[in-house]
Image (cartoon, rainbow, N blue to C red; front, side, top):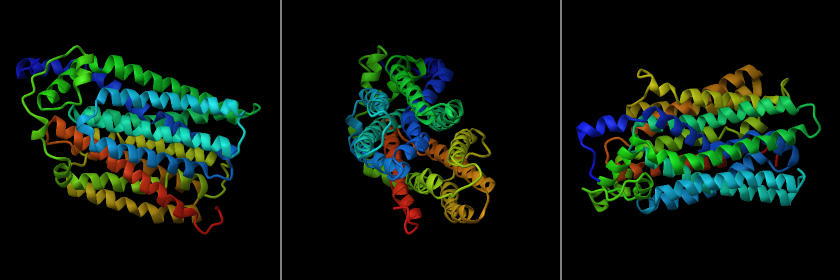
Length: 415
């Protein structure tokens, strides 16, 4: 098959654009649904494991697996079958989330070192799945329409908003029943498991067959991409004529030098965000009139505003395209560090809720701006590589932020 002609290819590729956007949104939701579920039921794990700092420890366990696996995949991205990579990742998410339910049922919701180690191992599996899915999907979408990337990351944020909303509902529903917190958490994990299995089916059976997706993958194949071969075959497209060789593409090192500021931008966004969210919100905001609802409200506010922020770049006047403008806005966010410190120490709940909302809004907006701008100006194989590097630096920022988050509790007797 040759690349579709300009006359025939353009109308053909637009077919299925809206449904492809929606599927990207669902796949984005599935890429973080399991992990957001673990974060959102943090109140349950704090009850079961009160001495083990669950929100901080589980996040710290998750990130080395995600970052280590992503480093390997980013290095070999040109040789990794994207189809197998993404299906494996979504399947691992589903199986690991189901494993959390089985572990809780097997231990009858009891605490202790053994069950905690088991949860940590499952969280490590989440990290491996995350590296497969986020790197694979972002690399894949980098050579398609920017709207697909925006929809994917809106779905990522939607997983947080959905889990927060469901958590509040289940907490209300089971608040008065025996073991209500545990019942709500199990129901929560069951919903997440179902969504992950749905993503497996969507990616494996439906997404590759959408005309617009087939168009862009065929185009990437003619430019030398080998990562799309299996997905094209699944869509019934064989023998794509490659007009470029993979050896003709820029090296990963060259790509890094050309776009280094975008990678640093993404790193800094998540260093700041994860140094505050979620550990600080669970453990460093003190006691307030909202009681045990306070942390849940803060998490929900962050997630909802993060979701809104991932749609604001669709408004032309708000979208940041200037590299200097992005860098300035991202560096300005570091004023959140003293702002959170003094708000937690001196201000009321309302100010903290507003501040958390701003943290989420800026996180979502700047993430989408960077992710949609960075891949521009390259061919398919290079855009796939840029996408993988972006996720690598995103995960690197998360890991660094998680480590820095521990500084909030040094010297306050929490160890």
